[in-house]
Length: 73
Image (cartoon, rainbow, N blue to C red; front, side, top):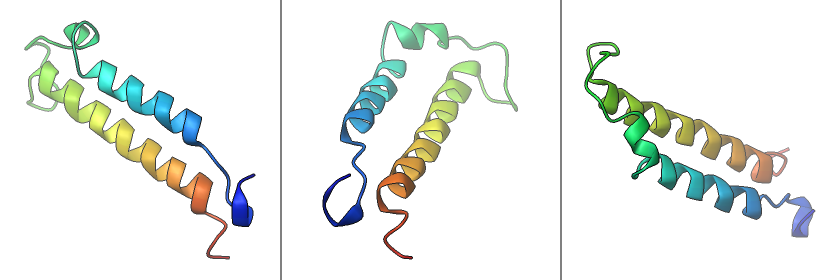
């Protein structure tokens, strides 16, 4: 526990940020760097990027709720 009853997820956040950066650059992006199959009309490489942006958004909301969720109560 951190000060004022806040939780600390700094290490997990740093690891997550590095992982998100790695899925967007070579060589990991090479897994999703192709045109077919189309996903909802988008080329797979664009769907790959949009998917990981969505994962990042959900995870950032979860990190925020974990650290600051009990402050408003």
